[in-house]
Length: 120
Image (cartoon, rainbow, N blue to C red; front, top):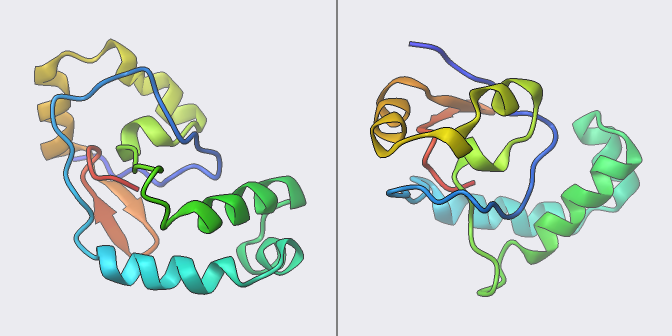
């Protein structure tokens, strides 16, 4: 088993479709945290998360739309855009590849591990 750490960069949509998506286990906790984090300024987020202002601005925007019914989660394997995730190339996956990844390629998310098809 390989454990991937999420990238600092991510996208909000993808042209790649997955055969199934699982919902977050701690969705209500994530909603609560997102609401609290949305209250911080870009500068505060930059310092707290150790990211540059540009990423902090993108992060703040994500927190601000987190509760929007028009915004849907994206599987971790498609959302993150770091070098490892680009080389995994989920756009080329078959249904069997997604099933294998779901069972053998967890993505670390702070203190949790997520199956790659779990929404983030």
